[in-house]
Image 1 (cartoon, rainbow, N blue to C red):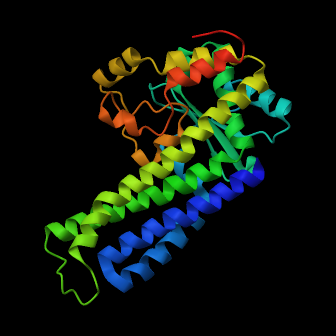
Image 2 (image 1 turned 30 degrees about the vertical axis):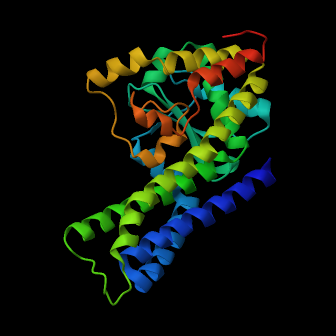
Image 3 (image 1 turned 180 degrees about the horizontal axis):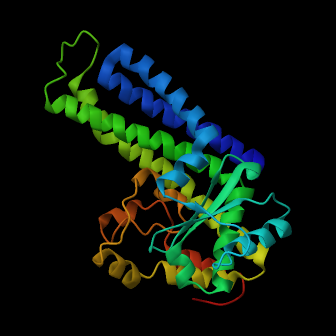
Length: 293
């Protein structure tokens, strides 16, 4: 598993760095390539060393310890001991949307965060299933992959926006001395963000199924995670939260981190969700105990 994930990490970094360089070239020609290479290297180094701090700060996550009313810390500690992993830092996020994620470059520098909404919604058994899922991401080192991909994907989207505004204000001509070509620039604006999203989809959907299965084995209770997924992916619940104006503003580049993607809406964009359908995940979990959904 570690070797497989290491290969995935290298491939994803190289591929998405290539996309980044192509967009940089479309914006600034040769100088854009040099700038994109420098930015890509800096981005990867920053995400490797500081990804956990960045994402936790973005979500205004607050650390919790033993005795917290949620009981999350104690559940995580028990799961870590059972799986032979270092104890992750544990955080709670002031959001009503039920969700959770894990982050960190390796098991020794990891963290798990849950929203207030998921703590209120789930009973301890279901919550244990969710936390086992996140512990599995840490054990499989999915957290490093997800943060590197999220960081570069976010940078690609920002570069594509820069290219779009450059075209709007006439910053590119077919005879540009820097080698910028308006057709290439247009393709970069359209194709680059889609390519970044497809890479996220490709890796994230596989990771989610693997983490579900690992969580079921860790807890010896597949139904706990299946029940949790049913509750937190309930369309009626998410619609009520959205209508109340309590849906948080999140970057699409980070959607693949969560246990479910509750931010993509009920539209055509669902086809490009970074997560497999909750119904399919629930079906696979219940097949592990011989229960058909």
